[in-house]
Image (cartoon, rainbow, N blue to C red; front, side):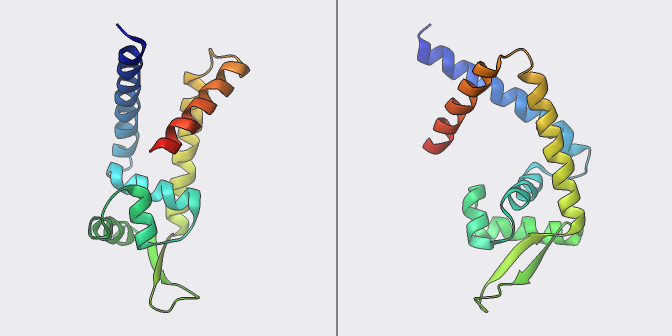
Length: 138
């Protein structure tokens, strides 16, 4: 098996395991994965215009509108007028949404600690650098 082939399989295996974990965690909150991703992006980056948020999520604004509507109905997000552009609206987390983000972010940190526990500090730095480079390619 070539190095590229092996790496491809390892990335897919890691993605599947992470996805399965994510689905289990999110399902316990009664959210869909796209709803949680919306919360994660808003929690990490702060309020955003719908277009910017849709781009970060890789979805259309129409798809995002449905997600934001559902998050608003659950009291997790809200639309607020943009202060400098009266034609524009921002999406932001409510206090309840921010609490969901903090809890979920903490779960990510714990998982990261668990799966990297056997790595040295140097190995963790190499993994982080490789992931940063890979993420820039997307």
